[in-house]
Structure formats: C-alpha cells, structure tokens
Amino acid sequence: MYRAWLTGGKCGKRLIANHTATNGAINANDLNGRYFLWVLMALPGIGLLVGYSRGAMDAMNMLHPTGEFGVRFMVIAMCIGPLADIFGSRGWTQWLLRRRRWIGFAAFAYSVAHLIFYIIDMGTLADMLAELDAPGIWTGWLAMLLMAVPGVLSNDASMRWLKRGWKRAQQFAYPAALFTVLHWGLLEWHWGGALVHIAPVVLLNIIRIIKLKGLSPA
Ligand code: HEM
Image (cartoon, rainbow, N blue to C red; front, side, top):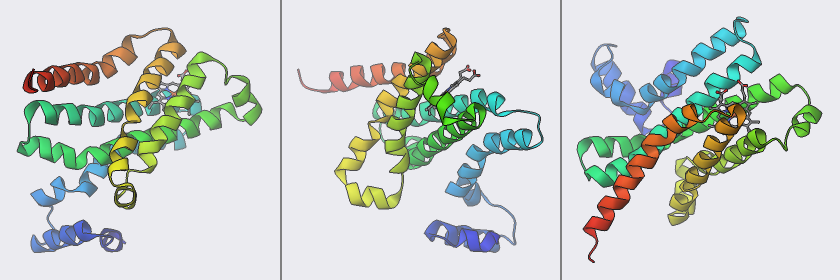
C-alpha cells in the first residue's frame, strides 16, 4: 500500500530508491521531499480530526482552528515571492519557491475543511442563506471563492494548460487574503488576530516594492 502510493510519480520512485538504498531507514532526501512536507502540513488537521471523531470537539469548535491554519499557510505561501525578490536567487529561496504551490494548496485544503465544518454546524441551507448578508459571513464566502481559483489550479496539468495565465490566476491570493482579514475582523469585531497574521505579507511586499523601485533606473 505504502509502495503503491509512492509509485505515483518520479519523485515517488526516487523516494523508494532512497528508502531501499538505506535499508529502510529514512534519509535526508526523504525528509526534503514533497511527501514529508505534505504529511507535516496535514498533521494539525489530523490532530483536529481525531479530536472531532472522539467527540472532544464539535463542528463549531473546529471552525476557529481550521480557519486559522488556512490563514497561516496562506500567509507562509504569500511571503515566499517577496522573500525571493528581496534576497534574490539563493538556495533557500529556491527551496521555498519550489514548495510554494504545495503550501498554498494546504491553505486551500484547510479552508475547504473550514467550510465543511461550517456546513455541518449550520445544518441546513436555509440557515446558511439566512446569514449570508452578514458582513462577517459574505466576506468569508468571497475569500473562499477567490482562494478556490489558485487552489483548484495548483497542479501540473493546469500549469501546462494555462502557461502564463497560471501566474495571473495565482494573483487571486491577494484579494482572497484581503477578504479573509475582513472576514476574521468583522466576525469578531476585534482586528488584532487577523492583522498580526497578515502583517508579514504586507511588510515584505512593502520592502519588495522599495527594493524593486531602488533597482529600476530613474
Ligand atoms: C466559505 C466561506 C466561509 C464561511 C461561511 C466561514 C464562516 C466562519 C464562521 C461562522 C466563523 C466563526 C467561528 C467561531 O465563531 O468561532 C469563522 C471563523 C474564521 N474563519 Fe471563516 N468562513 C469562511 C471562509 C474562510 C476562509 C476562506 C478563511 C481563510 C482561510 C477563513 C478564516 C477564518 C478564521 C481565521 C476564523 C477564526 C475567527 C475566530 O473565531 O477567531 N474563513 N468562519
């Protein structure tokens, strides 16, 4: 089963080769691969699902952590572009750039989980529609729709199909982040949490703009 799952792609074959070459012991290449990162990013979600399945948390309790992990992965993914522009092409910026798509996808996956628990918590479509006009709610829906564009297109087939358009599709992350901040702030009428989370994206983009302007001829 483990083997069948890994043989899906080139990376999987390399993983098996590394794995068998070291007599089953996990080596550094395994830990640097995409599967390890996926497992790492899924861990909080698995912990939450265990809590939910054991009845320690109900659907309402799941909203806050799934929403927050969605925002955190979104912020990490959105910091990578500015970091690469500020620090240039280095080993660690390339490392992050290669993983940005997966981190963005994790943000989308946690947001989908957030939406699923919202639906479970609300119970009926009528109840969901009844609160759709609340500013804290429609901003969440809008954030979700905007996020779905890069989220759904975060795969090799879409990249090949859209070519240059793919990069433009990724730009939907910016309005998605804006509406996420509004969603969070308007729900709580307390802006601290949302603003602290989004601050690194704003700061790094300001530094990026200053740096790129400084480099361009007057
Ligand atoms: C599909 C549309 C969405 C709906 C209907 C929705 C609904 C909700 C609701 C009802 C809460 C309140 C939970 C509570 O009272 O504890 C909440 C909280 C939250 N949502 Fe959403 N949400 C949506 C999309 C999103 C998206 C796309 C994100 C960002 C990735 C997000 C991030 C958050 C965060 C961070 C919180 C925590 C606020 C807090 O309780 O401190 N939501 N959401």
